[in-house]
Length: 462
Ligand SMILES: Nc1nc2c(c(=O)[nH]1)N[C@H]1C(S)=C(S)[C@@H](COP(=O)(O)OP(=O)(O)OC[C@H]3O[C@@H](n4cnc5c(N)ncnc54)[C@H](O)[C@@H]3O)O[C@H]1N2
Ligand code: MOO
Image (cartoon, rainbow, N blue to C red; front, side, top):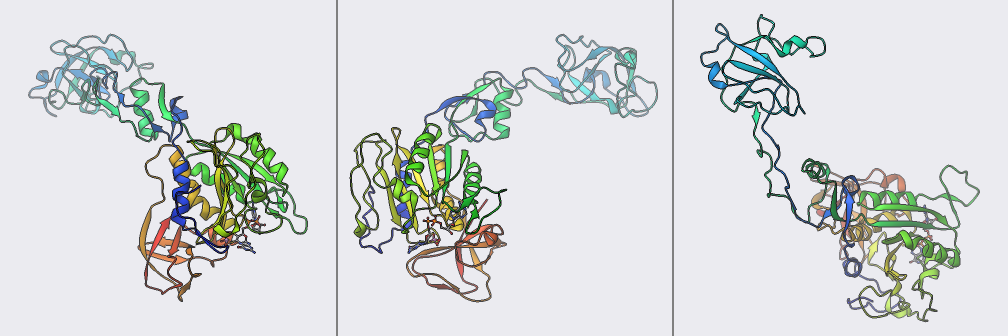
């Protein structure tokens, strides 16, 4: 199913990049929909949003104080306060503030519209607050001292025209581009949309990702273990990672090693899936249920075609129906990487839903997620930036790091200040060390060892 030349032979492995390319060639951004603002958080905007109404919509005060004419304060000073007649209050939301004539002031609150006639605002701290003494540090509440809205106020400082006034349109202007198509909607962008009065917005939706763990040994956390059992941790790691990548993720409880049950469960789940992720059962054992269930299966009612070709390094897909979006079945490959060697990938069901079948070893599952599933989720979401950032860093380790020949190794590591230190070993069952890592140290395929002090590529995890 790949445009990439297939590696030959039972031990043939696929390059990591070829596998990723094949996945990304299959995944298309989801169709846009109109969503309520908060449902659109983290989504990619697909329309240019122009400003329908200038912000602020009207000139208003940036301080609690007095709105007045700047010219009235000429010569005002601490020893020469200017007395003005207070003609009323204007609170935020008041429809018609009283006008401010010559020699008059309107007591004004932050955000309240500037009264007609006024061209400046003095903060209350520059005045006696109408109390007849020195400068005050606040107004008295209107409920306990309504007389503050009348009487005389003495102002101890002059003010420039326009001071403490937020002009209409000084933020965004009607007709301007507020947000361009392609913008990712974070909190400030959603706030801007709300401020200009938009309640819904056209975006690519969050991809819906169904996560299924497989293995008859798996027990739900919280339940006690019988001999030979372990707790299912992959479905939690992968569901959390999918959420972290921007998906709406659904965790399905672990499924035992029964191919019929697995197929039935996937069929049931397709209704809510833009992507299905499985863990476990993709290796070469006698109970590798994902491989068994998905080989030669398209998720369509027709009986699947036969076909397994061990000489190509991957099995043949069940059905190579031509045309975009055609379900092709799932292929299983060995990749030139460690951890994460066995992988499955394809599309199934009427909507050709992508399926990524990850290996069961917990570190393998997580590393595979970061390398393949995360970019697929982000591509479905229409994001431009698909990958984790990478940096170069110097290896800090007591001895040389070793890596299997011909495989790109992703060692769990801690990265800080241009240095990277492996944590734990290379084995793919080490969840304790994985939980302490913040990076993956990459040993390229062509290297079998890396010396302390050498520079390597590092994938930074979130
Ligand atoms: N003869 C060979 N054996 C194996 C090969 C190989 O090439 N030849 N590859 C090894 C590699 S590499 C990996 S990775 C694993 C992948 O195996 P599966 O994907 O079939 O995974 P399982 O056998 O189901 O499980 C492997 C391991 O992980 C544990 N596991 C599985 N699911 C979970 C879960 N949800 N939570 C926690 N732990 C889980 C499982 O108990 C096993 O210990 O195959 C190697 N073998
Ligand atoms: O390659 Mo397997 O994915 O653990 O070690």
